[in-house]
Image (cartoon, rainbow, N blue to C red; front, side, top):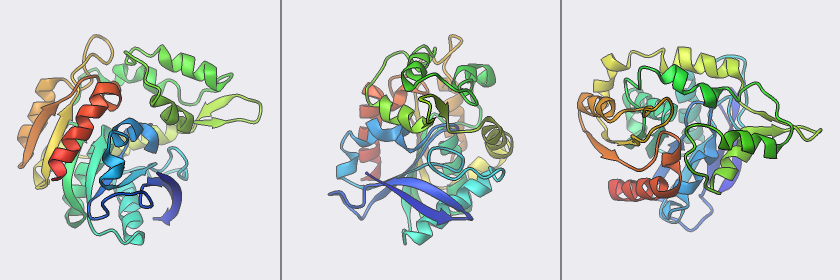
Amino acid sequence: MQSKLIHTNGIQLHYLDSASDNNNQSEIVLFIHGLTANAHAFDAIIQNGLDHQYRILSVDLRGRGLSEQPDNGYTMLDHAKDIVGMLQQLNIKSIHIVGHSFGGFLGIYLAIYYPTIVKKLLLLDAAVQMHPNTKEMLGPALGRLGKTFDSFDSYINKVKQAPYLSFWDEAMLSYYHADVFHNANGTVTPRSKPEHMMEAVLKGSLGMPWGEIIGLCQKETILINAPGIYHLGAALLPEELAKETVNMLPNAKYQQVNGNHQTMLYGEGAKQIAAMIQSFIK
């Protein structure tokens, strides 16, 4: 996977691209990460054979990773225009989308409002209604933003104490390295800014009437749910709420994998998701 920058919708967008690798160029899969994540969130999934079968694109959404951080412009439309502009410049006509959490909502938005570019849609733990205590459950993950840690090691030690991290996978390291800016004095600071992420929530994921528009998504869809305990003794997306969203989509199926909202991207969950992607794209 090569690290690349492209100018789109008025900003510099960073993405990972497997175009130079030995893969099948006829099928292109775009991975879109969660709210505060980055393009490396899917490394474990991609490394389970996908990078040898398809052209893989994994993007840092605006304000995350190595992408530019404008002071505003974090609505779903802003994010969608970033993606559409990137694809146009790469001369890519259509893609399969794999979207985790916030990235899943963006995938739905693209499938509804830019239907010609989306072939099939795979939603990873993204639903119209998440757990009622989602705000409190995301507290530990969002709490790292705006803080500076003494070193990368101290940052990783803090990460490993998170309630949702039920195991450690070495494949997580690339994601957490990309999550922080390494300061000259050896300290590290998460790249995503709290004010940008708040705008992405209020004007992005919460700013859309998903219950009213989700039925407009006609694309063949799989919602992959990880019902393991995330925090406060519950799953971030309980099975019954995931199935409610599946029933609201005209052409969707429900599947389940090991892990919780975060750990589903690693270990056994990553293997299961990779296999589901391969089966679904055929």
